[in-house]
Image (tube, rainbow, N blue to C red):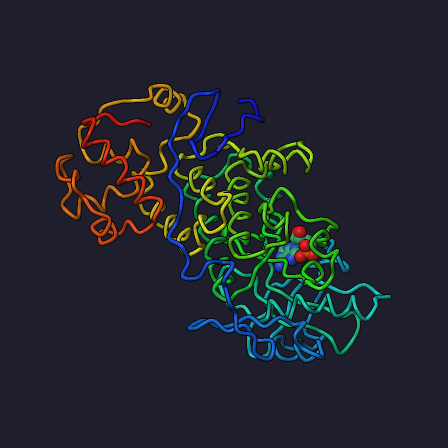
Length: 435
Ligand code: AMP
């Protein structure tokens, strides 16, 4: 396939070679608050959201050392055994080794150290990662074991992730996982991101290179450095740890006017989905950053990677909605992925299989059952919901209402809209489904 065969997701639908293929209905249930109106109550630097634990920005501390003391455990350097260098971080080497915790067995850890000759600001930025990470406690977020600040070198100790960063790991194992394994990894990342967004933490640099993988294929979100998120610095939006905004991973509103929100993290998550399903391919291949920005603005989106299930590409496209409130929330993404894992048949239809292309080149075909109809409109994941609610014949769905859909568990606004509009065409045109 031509790697530049983008999907144009303008209002009218996805177009490929000029023929309209799928009418897109987007729009997820709006968050209770529009992101624009997300009013957070700042109290002594605390962001308060009802019913959730709150993330405290280390910069709200007058003394950043206090943030480290509050959120990270001081570890005695004599309990750490450094074994080998495994990578290079922004501030110095990353090593693997072991940590002896009193009363517990030794555990494998990763050790990041701050290279000699650092400035005060570098020390503060380096340790800010620990004060952020130390506030999180979730199986899909990299766990902080502690810090060494009382002697040199200053170190940050985290759990060890045997398989390293996700992008490298996938490239090394190209084509070796089942789609369910890949969806399992994506589910983990989405779950970690839901946790972060519930705590009002916006990551800003979600990408496969910033996900770590352990020996059980569990994926964990990492890279919580602060140096790229200094709101007061006019340069900051354009400088990340690597120097620039990661254009290919970043939502258009974040590139254009620095509107970084959990919804822009969802955009990046869609790119991570694409990276995972394509086993570490570079998003937009060798296109220049400027060309990527222009293509996105014109409505183009990455096509489905090879062997990508239709439902997963659809979810990616949903994450890349231009309007950020039309994108799914991380909680919804977790729910969708859970359903796909429980019902692997829903992953069978591939976006770029010859079977699928045949279907798509035939814009209309007949359906006989509710199951067939749901498959045809790409809502196959709701087959169980319909049958257990008693909707077994096509006649029975002709007058279904939005509240009935919600009752049976179809809660996403975009999916409700899609189902109701095709029900309408069933009423007028009979069992001929336009795809
Ligand atoms: P970072 O500075 O966090 O980007 O880390 C640099 C590199 O070190 C990463 O790309 C990983 O390959 C490796 N690394 C960092 N943290 C860990 C960890 N907890 N377990 C295993 N490898 C890690």
